[in-house]
Each structure stands twice: as C-alpha cells, then as structure tokens.
Image (cartoon, rainbow, N blue to C red):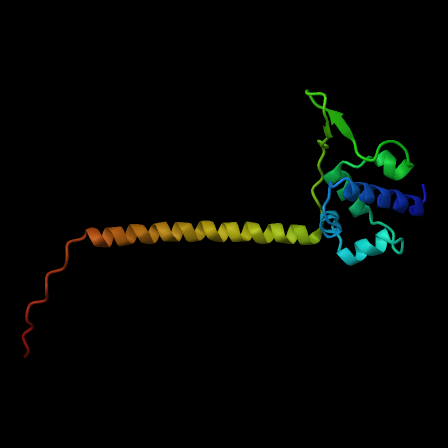
Length: 149
C-alpha cells in the first residue's frame, strides 16, 4: 500500500474516532499520537504524511487494526466480545513503551529527584534523632560567677 493510501486510511480511522465520540477533540488526539495540533492538521488535510510513531500510538491507544491501515481491509477497531456478549475494545498485551530521547531524559530526571528525596528524608530523620537526643539531656547548670583576677 502506498503512503497516500496509508494516509487516507489514517484519516478514516481518525474520523471514525471523532465521529463515534471515542475521542472528543482533535487536539487531544494529536497529543495522544505524539504530535502538535498544527502537524496533525497538516496530515488530516493531506499536506503531510503520517509518521510511523503516530501510527504506532494509534494502534496502542485505540486498538486500530493494522490490516485496516496497511491493507485497507477489515474493521477499523479491533473489538472483542466480553462475558455479557457485549463488544468492547480489546487491549493489546504487548504495549510498547515510547523509546524517545526526551522520555528517557525525563525518566533520568525523575530517578535523580527520587534519589535526592530519599537522601533528604534520611537527613531529616538523622536531624530529628539529634534534636531528640539534645532535648532529653538535662539542662546545663547556670555558670557560677566568674572571678576576675
């Protein structure tokens, strides 16, 4: 399937999500797919091609069918039948974590901050123990008068 056809299928899938109130706003969907609203608009208007990472996010977040996007066949969304014979969105078991540099940097920052918080908690506990020890000591006797020479 050509890039143009994949874009057309992507636009159909997005329209389906919005028309069926699965997604309320295009802006929110753009964020979920990992792009700016401006780029998303360009793609929906056929002036840009959809990016692979956006397709992957579409598959992961909304369970859009690979066959629908890449082959132009089958259902748009994969549904499964639950125990009450109702059809619900099926979730993928193989969720993929974004492998982007900014995500990794944020993770490192969060880990560093968590380490700093742990060290500060230890210091606070240590200081509390020192304060408790100082408070439990008897008060020092007042200095007696000093004799001057």
